[in-house]
Image 1 (tube, rainbow, N blue to C red):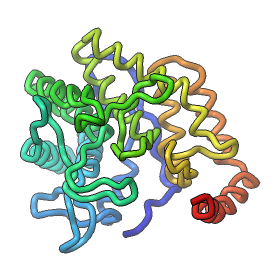
Image 2 (tube, rainbow, N blue to C red; image 1 turned 180 degrees about the horizontal axis):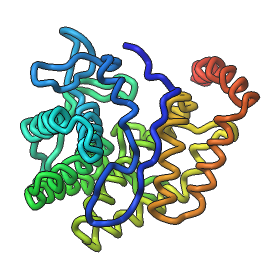
Image 3 (cartoon, rainbow, N blue to C red; image 1 turned 30 degrees about the horizontal axis):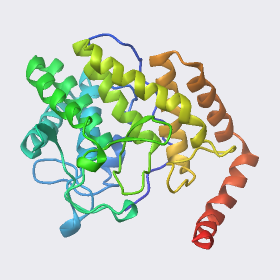
Length: 308
């Protein structure tokens, strides 16, 4: 599998808190070529993107959801509307066909293991739940089926209230801060981008419903990021999670972490997110910093092996 090109640019879309959701908070359209050129895997007979190739290919809903979000945004731009409408409907139909019930909520399980985080087949991701919510609500608005997909999205949101110990993805850290785990591993991992994408799905549900209880959850999540963002800064580069504490790849630093700081600043007005957005952009553009980064990419794995 090829690695995504870090030179692409996934900018922030026009961010608002209007009830009409419009385009997703981050413009993923530039990443469409990753799918078209099969960076991640094959397509099935219905045009659904898969992870892996041939007999090894599996369905991974995050690729399906993000493919759907790209199609949705292209429809809004009036680009190849018939093609992207068919793609969007295929993605949403797959989600509807593959949802599962769990303790009165709706989940989408990953039917493959994730050895990196010690997860066996059947795990559920907080991030994936959040992105499903973002896609379903936009689909409902686009095709005048809002109430159906609000109900579905509330059920997906309700899963986020289930604690890790009971099969969910919700955790509280040692400071009592609320987290939704992208990878619900036995050792808390607290992946930053996964948590924020979960939060964006919650924002979408609140924007449409105006539910005060959902807004309280948003406020808790924003507090978590304000009080924890320093844990994702190495001093010269951003960090992927709190467990392995690995430096983010250049692709993630540029196309995920930096834009998400801008999104959070636009949504919340909190200056701390703007400061990290500017700080990480400066790090990205420093030749000396990037030279040091290449050294650390080589050294860090050895240091981890030594520490064990």
